[in-house]
Length: 319
Image (cartoon, rainbow, N blue to C red; front, top):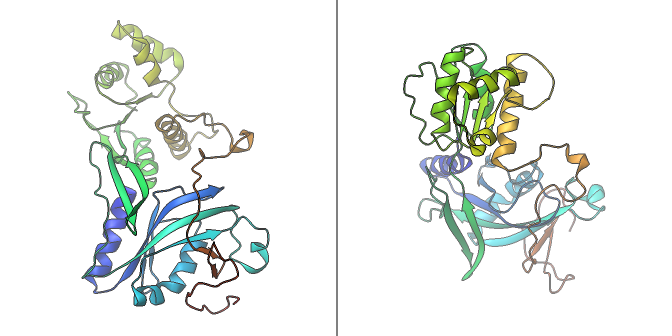
């Protein structure tokens, strides 16, 4: 399921139950953060949470404020700052050591939130504005789709792992003239040489970025020999044996290695251990913070740090 689909469903569920809530959108980050701009969460006035904008700590804190913020029904931009080591002592205990700037928009049935549509086949551009100015421009990708070919017990784990991370996975147990339109990756697990030749040819004719093939590398070369004319682009897209060297030999472990490799291909990643990276984990998405700073329960004005912005008092939070 596309992440946006969950957001749409959460908003619909609250409105259907005649409840109000908050749409929280990450519009800026600085330093190390759990999510990047464009991440969303729906927090109901009842404290329910759908969608991740952090590891859960920010969502829980906003949930405590939800009733008050729904009551005044004023959109606001706030920033959670975990860059200070003092956070461990009196704050939320955030571990990312960064700042997250978020647009918080109350909504109810009379004032439904503006949500980007869910892209089906093509990416789309979406702009979010606040107080007459654009605070976020984002390019939203359609849901990734993976076609898995095979009749064995190893196909279902691949589909399960792919579905778990928000992709759409479809298992094909018949491969006569397969329709691969709309699929971004193809995983071939028929364990039959001739079937594999036909399916690799069909995958080459599709727009799939990734074509995974079970079996040793020599088997893949034999399949390419059978096909005949193979371009460099075809060789680049074909991954045989499919998967990363993660260890393990169960169907579930193999599925994890295959989906991990597909994820790396989709995001043009090296798949190296994060501890080996010299720079930040994500590409920098820095922006200037000109709004209120919600710092571990203390909301202060950036221009006048000694003056406190009016925010609801929370139990257990310092004044």
